[in-house]
Length: 208
Ligand SMILES: [Zn+2]
Image (cartoon, rainbow, N blue to C red; front, side):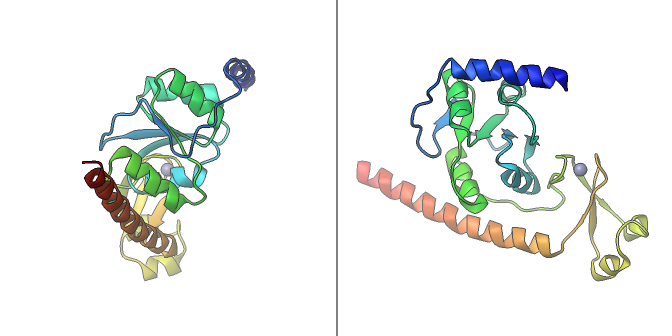
């Protein structure tokens, strides 16, 4: 923990050296090359976005307490796109050519729409077997009802037939109300992406 505090204080100094941060607009992308197999590292202010990205199957490192220098260095080391709503961190990353996307939208739906558009991702795939654990980013496997007797409430076991478990932390999942909310979110997201795609095509048509 001591090391972590030291890292944080040295990072504050580093960021201070390039302050004040410029007025970067919402969603400026820097140093990014679009890829379907994109991995992320997400800053502490975007926790709910990180969880949703994991459910959508993306590999996402997120820690509420991780300091900015750690996030930046992990982005470089593991070739992860840094998602941040910290203007100074985004600027710091931009200056070094690190893949970073600055996100300021006010809802996860808008954030996801912006992010997918910025990455050139046109489809939203929601498949529980491809999801990652929302809690720890572990991979998900299916598991039988038998294995879960005594672990999750019997009422849940009676109501559902398919169950999933994180191979890392053991958290169990089933398609309950949370899953239905995620389905609705992905439907709205698809609509937003279609609109963004149309707007993009219109812009290009006008420019030619
Ligand atoms: Zn897990």
